[in-house]
Amino acid sequence: MNLHEYQAKELLKKFDLPLLKGRTYINNLDTIEKDLNDLSGPPWVVKSQIHAGGRGAGHFKKSFNDKGGVQVIQNETQVPVIAKSMLGNILITKQTGVDGKKVNRLFIEEGCKIEREFYLGLLIDRTNSQLMLMISAAGGMNIEDVAEKNPEKIYTTHFPNLTEINLPKKLEKQLELNSSQFEELLSISRKLVRAFKSLDASTIEINPLVINGQGNFVLLDAKLILDDNALFRHPELEKLKDITEENPLEYEASQNNMSYVKLDGSIGCMVNGAGLAMATMDIIKQFGEEPANFLDLG
Image (cartoon, one colour):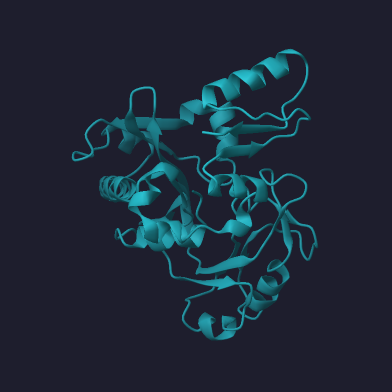
């Protein structure tokens, strides 16, 4: 289950991670002027909340400036203006497709001076059934390009025992950190692992994880995906699902205990069992056609 950035940060805040103060708006901005009095700035950062990556590098269907779905604002009077232009607009990113996604929610956050940007990710390495941490000093909007063109810039380490979380000392040199920053990174990693386990997550990504003007780490963005199969243990988290971000057919199928994924082909598939469903799609492609969907009836 995907969460919005502001939801991920609310959950991660409970694990004492370094986050900035922000305010969330759903469908209206009635309190924005009052809220700005409680947010330190400049700058302020206005962030579109959709379930898609590449927001900062995206563009709006109804263009109002040359910036994307994450905008840094220096003038306080411009914050409501930019927010009103974003809310209800269609944001198009490389992950949304040409139709884009409507922005129904905004997150306005305090800004900070950025000295350096990192990428940090936690996911399950299914090859060896261990939690894996990925980190790179080349964080930011182009981390996908780094992974494709310069994978050697992304360092990985595994945690076979979740009660003993340590980072290899060589990371301190590889990431060009001082000893204090390395210890801070270790502390953040341990807290994120604790959050990963406690929340039954399948993925946590912090991009960027930055070093601010005081030389300390701050989580500027957060992506948190929860394991659907573990939601029965977290009814309070299931309530966070934003069904407006779901594909209507995929959501309806999930409500009937079916696994459905819409694809771009023309041949529909209705199969019992994920393995057979994948094999059926492979056969369709071998004959030069494209499947219209993945559907496992369970």
